[in-house]
Image (cartoon, rainbow, N blue to C red; front, side, top):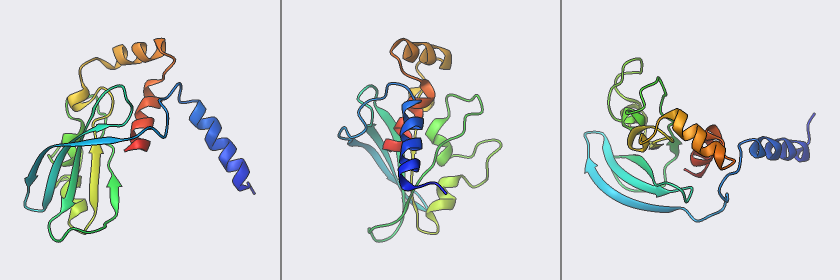
Length: 154
């Protein structure tokens, strides 16, 4: 049986394999860029400063009704080679995924949902995956590591 110390050591080793990452405890900044009501909840478009390198567009969806503390689910969008989609699949139907979209399904029982555009997807699709991979490699970073970092920070 592994001890807590062993688990922490493994977690630390795995985190180190993600490449050179920004500081894990840097402040997170959030800017609300748009808000609209839907039939099932309030959709907020956000710009997050998670990594200090590039703004991270996000959708935060919360149920209609009184404000209050609720569990929040971090929804990581699909890849599927469709780099232009990103976080929008949370609120719009997409081939191969359920109908209605996950956002609607998750807010109905009372959950908040947060979805970010991963590196190279949605509004962050300004460079190809190959370009991002090479650019980060030159800086000692790993594209997958930066994606995981942003998800952890979200």
